[in-house]
Length: 248
Image 1 (tube, one colour):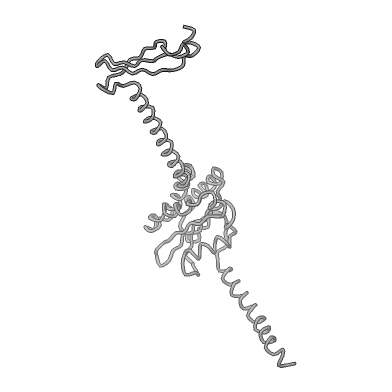
Image 2: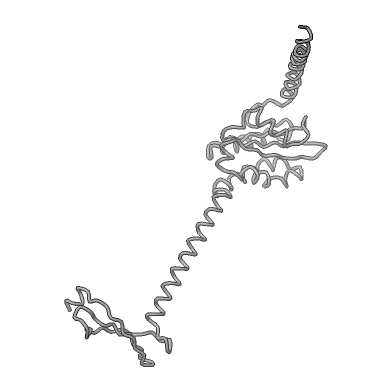
C-alpha cells in the first residue's frame, strides 16, 4: 500500500509546495506595478502644475466629446523586458482592457523615452487603427524627449482621427466616391454615345435636324426624318404615334 500511494503523495506535496511560491511570485510582480492615482499618472515627473492642469482638461474634453477615457502613465521603472509587455500589464492591472479606453504609456530608460499606446475592446472594435496612429503621431516627439508636447499632441491626433472618421471610414468613403465617379462617367459616355448616334451626321459631323411626317404604312405610325443641311444626309425612323401626335 505504501508503494501504491508513494508517487501520488509526492506529487501532491510538490503541488502544495509550489502553489504558494507561484502565488508569491505573481503577487510580487503585480504589486510592483504602479497604482493609478487618476487618469493622469506622472510618476516620471514630466509635468509641472500647469502641465498637469492642461493635460487633465484635454482628458476631460476627450471623454465629453468622444466618450473615450484616456489614461496616461509616465514612469521610469519597468520590471518587464519591453515597453509592450509593461503597457499590456498596466492595461490589465488598471482594468482598462475592456471599455472605451485609451492608455498611453511613456517610459524612460537610460535617458531615452519610449511610448506605447493601447486601446480597450470598445475602442479597438470601433476604431481598429486608432491606437497605432496615435502612437505613430507622437513617436517623433517622444524620441526627442519632448514628452509633454507628445502628451498634448496625442489629443490632437485623436481629434483628427475621430473627426475624420478614421482610416477605415476614410478608406470606405474614398472607395464609395470612386465608385460613384465611375458610374457617372459610364452614364455620361452612354448619353454622349446616344447623342452622337442619333444627332450627329455620320458623313460630315454636323448636327442633324429633325422633322416628322405621317407614315405611309399606317396611320398609327409616323416617320421621324433626321437630315443634314450641310451634306444632304437623311435617315428615317418610324415610330408609333402618341396621343399628342394623333390629336394634331
